[in-house]
Length: 308
Image (cartoon, rainbow, N blue to C red; front, side, top):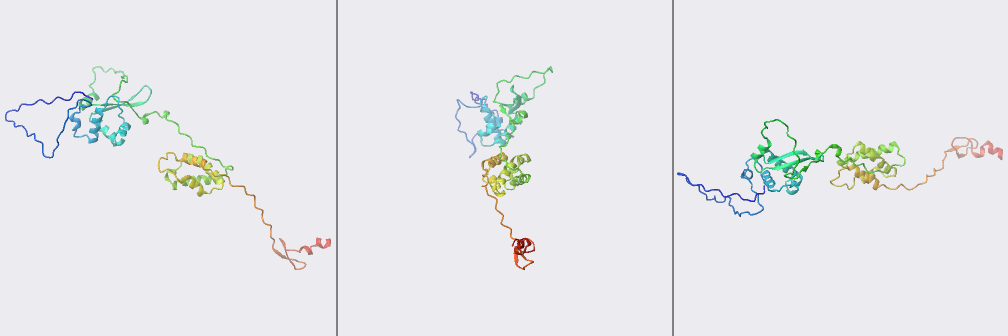
């Protein structure tokens, strides 16, 4: 890829009889070259790539860039997207173009550690790449042993989606939430309904049944401390980050524990007012008196008369 020798100047052809040399004067306004001979840090690129009629301009530029890189350079999509402004989607499409036209070979291999990696080879001659990709069958059909992984042309690209499922890190549990002193079923049901209604205020707060069951006791602890539904809803939904909320249930659990209000102050039970009986008319003296039922007043009762 990094050739030190520039290409030799073309041999001058002798004019044949009856052949008129073409007019080599450039067209007015056409392309002109101001060339300086390279003596170091240059790469020879074939016109079959630089002037390809089917490759896109991005694929041609990316192919030239790959041929100019030294061995061991990182050419995975993530590294190229960090190097150029086109983005991962366009770079991946350009790599597929180069692969389809024989300028790139990619193969997946399993390294001794068990990971699946991609080995990438840049080809400066697409015809040679096609011959390498489809070799003629050997006269003897004996299977050849798999080659030992040698020095790669480029460093292998790691693919997270190819890793075995058992190696993925387990999901972290949600933070602990407060618990009500008296977890009445009615209180927990009200708390679950409040959590289910949060998605109306922010679609990102659509909680699963498992997350709702974990958060409901924390909301019930707020309601038990005389925090109304509106106050709990405001504490959970106000000031949410505009982006980057990857796990809403964890954020709600943190707020329930961090912003828990204090218990309400102790209030002595109110003394009930004395009972007021209706007015009654005494059956003995026709005097009005208060009593729960009709009858005689205190002065006309037999027990009072005997006492006097």
